[in-house]
Image 1 (cartoon, rainbow, N blue to C red):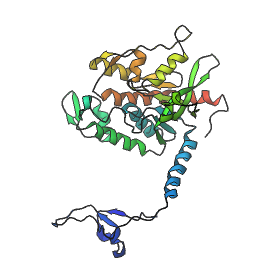
Image 2 (cartoon, rainbow, N blue to C red; image 1 turned 90 degrees about the horizontal axis):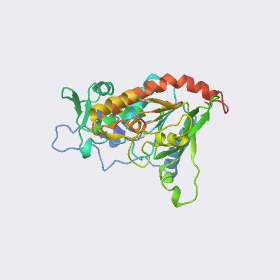
Image 3 (tube, rainbow, N blue to C red; image 1 turned 45 degrees about the vertical axis):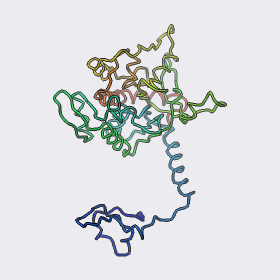
Length: 330
């Protein structure tokens, strides 16, 4: 069914009776600019409950669908969204849920350093910009995107258009779902979620239990700052504490060194424990690598490496999960 208001470039294709509802975005050469006949213009009628049902019906259908996901990405910043793009492009058969604690996804990639707008990426990260068609200035060893928001909005737009991806923003991961293999090794098999506002207010009222999403691989890209920074890494340390067999100890992020940091983050991106891949600056807390500051090439390429890591272990983790607790449901 056609929408009641049409955005047209060629108004002459619309019949006379529809002209009052045409928005023509070409100013033309007339001294008087008019994009529509605003006196006759009106939106189609709607009942308020219709709007509510249109939103809630789809949201809860998505929750039902993605409560059994193939991959869950924690954190919708530059690393997480870059990984989502590569995963969805290569495996359109996978159900990919992205969990973002903030209302607005994008992490720290809406601006450059110190609230400056330009975004610097060291080569060869420009190859990812070429892939998603973001323009840049070539400065030799590095490139500059005129505004970090151009990169993020373009990447986000492309990611959200994939039919096998659902972004749940304003949603926090509060815990990890775990399994024990026959050998006793701990495996991550999903995430525990709650509304972010609930997660931030557990101490102000009585307990509000969370929700869950089962999956075969969790990819965590929660960064290093903020209330949910390095969440999965910190949770793994408490699940496998120091002094126990196969302990998981955080190295603690070191001081800023761009030259060391970016290579270390990309090369170190990996599955850190069965079922859990960590990428981006969260990895610096795991490995004790350096902070990189306002250069973003490693964020994009760590996402690419993370997608590679997920795909290389996915079939094995899926097989393991299908052998316990009722297997994996569609």
